[in-house]
Length: 330
Image (tube, rainbow, N blue to C red; front, side, top):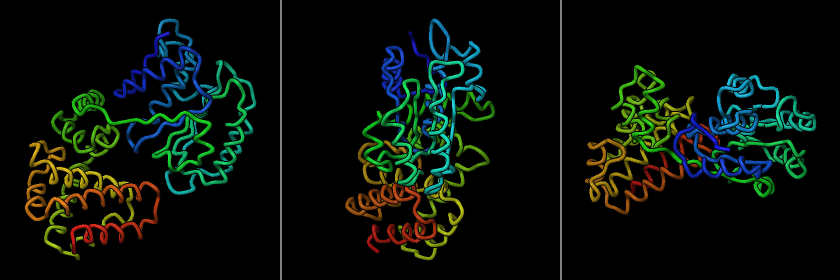
């Protein structure tokens, strides 16, 4: 049986691995899809679920059988999807108990009963321990697909009963073509620039192109770079205050900022600027020594990880301003 994950592009080795597991009926009862927001975890989870209920004879998911059509419309009686809002502890234990209470009912139409648990990293310890009970001795027909930003946010006991699959960004040109194919008014060069800036993350690149968000992100990154280079503390704090109600925008800016630091660190040697921000890169490379640029890069990476772990937003913004100035030697 050939697997056809046409809605999920890139990550060819991952798709080959899943194709083998599904076609050979060796798919584990619990899969953890790991990757940053926008990388395609939910899309792949739905493709796996669709493949498991598909009745196609040549390839799965075929997209044509009644089972596939129900799955794609989100109305298949054997596919259940739950997702947390994204905040810390927002995946409540009551939801997990609801899953546990229904999992022992036999499938309605398919061979499997599939549960997609989005943002499973938002479960607290009680919720994870609750789901662990069913992962230890699941019904033969049950398949759990958990999506997480990082496996480190799951208990070791949960991970030990799951197969973890990490997802990466896709080729920038391939991603730009995909974005343009699904958004007819999008300019290819802008899509390509966004794909490069977000390191192959189609979700984030697409989001950045809505309502001029990409341009706003670029402007904010350039302001931050100027404030860091000139040691203007007030300007740095002012930039930080803009994210008081939008954590995801802060993460997006930090990711592009990290790429700018990377370019300033090694771009002059390789001639390759992944960020596309030549002026900011030139300013930073002239202002700071390699040691400082490396410190700035590592600091941006640490701040992104902290933001993704749902740290308090006010404290996070304060930490961003303080840490960037410290990394710059202020």
